Amino acid sequence: MTEITGTGIGQGVAIGPVVRMAERLPEPADAPSALAAAHEGERARSALSAVAAELQRRGGAAGGAAEGVLEAQAMMAEDPSLFELVVARLATGATAERAVFEAFDSYREVLAGMGGYLGERAADLDDVSQRVIAELMHVPAPGVPDPGHPYVLVAHDLAPADTATLDLARVLALVTAEGGPTSHTAILAREKSLVAVVGAADAARLADGDTVVVDAAHGLVIASPSEETVSAARARIAERAAQAAAPLTPGALADGTPVPLLANLGSADGAAEAVQLGAEGVGLFRTEFLFLDAEVAPSVREQEAEYTRLLTAFPGRKVVVRVLDAGADKPLAFVNDAPEANPALGLRGIRALRSAEAVLRDQLTALAAADAATDAELQVMAPMIATVEETRYFTTLARELGIAVAGVMVETPSAALIADRVLAVADFASIGTNDLTQYTMAADRLLGTVAELQDPWHPAVLRLIAEVGAAGAAQGKPVGICGEAAADPLLAVVLVGLGATSLSMSASALADVRASLKRFSTADARALAQAALDAEGAAAARTAAESAAAEIVARRGAGG
Ligand code: PEP
Ligand code: MG
Image 1 (cartoon, rainbow, N blue to C red):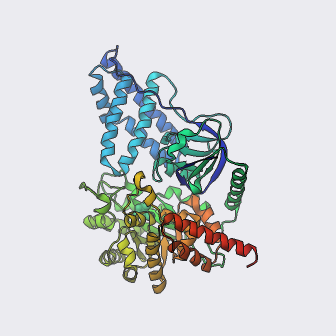
Image 2: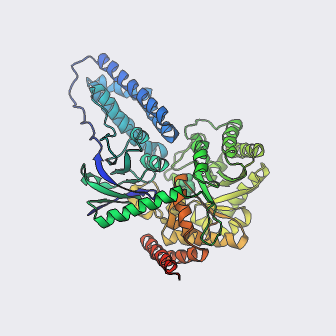
Image 3: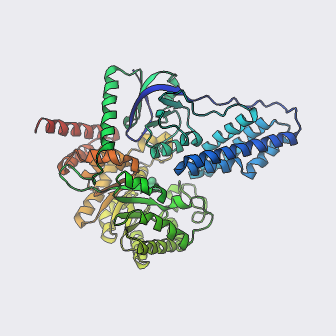
């Protein structure tokens, strides 16, 4: 057996034969063109438009989050500033193929230099470039293979165009050498509930036809697996299928203690699916996702329409909307206009909104109006709170503008350490474990090089969560979790043991977490939490919780 490690997306397991994705096209030769620059220019223009049209077509066929990603790619192909770069290269006598190659390269550098969300999208340009060059060479674009049977797709990385159009009846799992937990491949895999391990640097060692077990829960790809590994994987596949088919009961522990299971959404488009997967409401609506491309602040009316659409999907249910978390990895043109050396430590979240208070006022006004027009139980919270004073500022303004329930996100160690004082002012707290981990471990959540430190199992993070849990319990105020940590079935139990009263996650994770909670009582959850808190580091905390969980399950099996 050979084990390859990477970042697992979700909890799935799959077994199947490897089919590798076609290699990239060779770099076009840097030789002078035999054709006139104007002729090459025409060839380049029509290849760029053909690729843009094809990406649009694929986007329309795929729908959902993929549509936006593919449309953005199509726009890149048609960007006039890119074409200007092509023309400049052609003027030096380059072929259309070479000019396109070089133009995309420098365009990519510009985008990468912008950092944040746009920087992450820079990688998408490579795919557009390859497609345009293939079009010019009259060869098929590198893309997803179709061997005619189910398979595990292994690729260097997957372009959005490929991920969006994967035939889910054929692709059992996806393994990529590149990509982190927030890459587009990971985002789309999560949305499609595709078993995936990304950033598996050694994936190149897997050959066509190898049988592999892909274990997303442990971030493992096992080549030439033993009989035992295969049968354990089969058992887990069967167990997960049974979980997915289980009735959609409300989230609860084995002793009946309710733990509402909510969905994280970035647009009302995902609402119907979340309801279908048993979401009992929304624990985090990321409003900034609605306006990432907006140059000017959205109007109250425009926002009201979006929020009404969301709230209408959850009559009688709790819907927690977060006001704009602009800045750092999600800059908004109409809020963040000054460049910063360390944007994650700068004007982000509530700090940015305070510096643009009119935007915050408009958003709260639109939310209050949408609430009045619908039957959902709206709650509103502010991101990146670090002080009691910020808490007071936000909750006072929110109430003044007609928001009945106003809370805060706990994403900074500061807010966690003074949670008792913060909760004396706010109606509830929701812990954003992605940022809380980033700031506690001083490890950039977008950087693959420090991904190991970005682990919410770290006892330093768990201790902070325990502080918030204790403050919530003492004051009878709800403490939700809405970071990725809530989607890890075992960590979810630990979080409840630390005092979380609800869990919010991508809808595709709900079934696994629902099943995991049902296996443990409140006392068990506390015991698992203590085992994790007592550990020395993140890996040890996970192992300690796993052992404690196995003991509890064994004891119960033996009737103890
Ligand atoms: C978090 O930080 O955990 C969170 C839920 O917010 P976001 O991921 O949008 O920053
Ligand atoms: Mg956050």
